[in-house]
Image 1 (cartoon, helix red, strand yellow):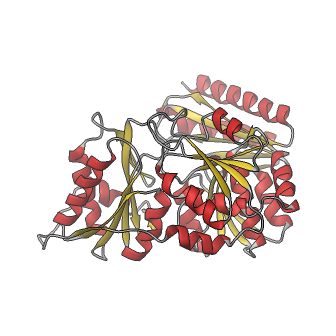
Image 2 (cartoon, helix red, strand yellow):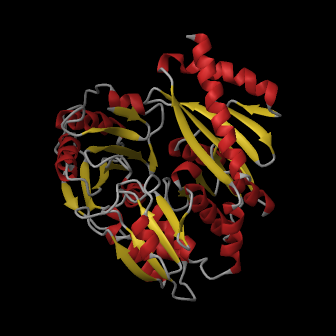
Image 3 (cartoon, one colour):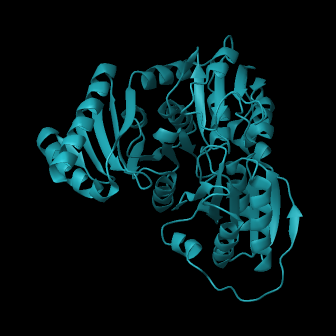
Length: 432
């Protein structure tokens, strides 16, 4: 089971069961000051059982539950602004047998100081039993107001992946003027897994042939991957296109995770914006956004564009609409060509977790000798030149060290990763 600020996740019926759900939701109740909590789930088979159990734990503690049913994660985040708290029953892009809980306070995910209060036992005072009612969301109408109506009627293909975006992404895109072709609408019979960033998306590549663009969502609808002219784009391109649209809307202050493509940062700065970098992770980006009162940003590795005025989470569905509004313009092709001229390679190597810190410290020393700048915000990032960098980070959940690199030369990017993995392994051998 994983217990992080991104949520509780585990294999349901193995290391995650209903007893855990009761305990975590009972503890979360102590953070719900409004006495109200929105709740929704994705399409995993265990979702209804977990949602009902979570609702019962909240109501036992006097909290009124507002049940959204099967909805994407961004919808619960949006409604949690209204009710003061929220729970998403989801394990995001993990395999189907997994499930979990994402906790929301005042429209944002929990932070590091709140996580222990959910994991550790909390004694709740006896109080009246809370109520439960089914509610709907104005998410589609609210998102459409941000995007506006399209002058043209672009044809788009949407790969739902059997997830919770089914009733939201196509309807939003149609409401702004797109002609939408949907594939993999239901979980049963879906031809791909829950994570579009890891899948080759062959069916979407085929379905989007002859159309302006293709969009693929993960199971809970917060991640988005773009397919354009028969090619699956990197997650950084999704973020870059969202950023380009927000610049067009007049936003200038951005926050990006440290592993986001240099192309996104360059594009922002060339168009008069500023960039603050953070540790990898949606929660870290959002925490910095709140602190800096930033207007937009996100995390390149997960294709996660974030627009704080609308939602404090990755916004795959809204982003698909924002990108669609750029289709057919010179700006769209300009942005896409700029982002595509950079190559990101992400890999990992097995390293026993007890040696992670020592290995990173040793590699950091080598980076300091070899590279013009070394950044230790999250792991160690070496700036090789204006267009190339490498980052190593320890995994908090696996016995691996992650290696990411980027360059405007694909061969160079691959060589950087190869050489860095070799350096990490050599350092590991030397300290064992």
